[in-house]
Length: 180
Image (cartoon, rainbow, N blue to C red; front, side, top):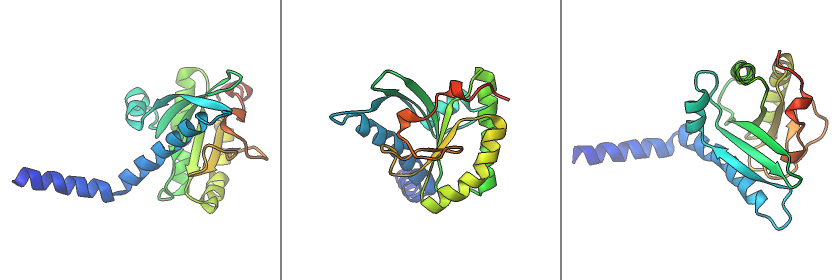
């Protein structure tokens, strides 16, 4: 009886916690991309989706993204990306500090990977862009941002960009240059 009660308390705790909301939000980005790829005239499709757990097993010593994916455009261009899903609870300097791990991963791999940040509101995205831009440029990392819930449309804005674009239009990482 006590074990059953203990499991129910754990389940209730997880269902109410921020971790579940974060997990659902990050997975929502990927399910939005899956849905976008299934339209009648898709601009591309999600070919690979790794969970946060698989990412942690693969790169946990360097970085712990909320997911990894590969988007393939209708023309066959492959865009690997790492997802950071922000719920608006972390301090902004902490978000920028995460880029150190991504720079370490890029150095270990010999090339950077597109990093996508999603934010809960336009105001949070704007505030985060202010702290992320200098950090990403200094580390020569390709970073784009969007507001959650709009990941399948023309929403991604590179930190140094002037217009929002669909995922497949983001710059190729080879255009970023070496990792410094």
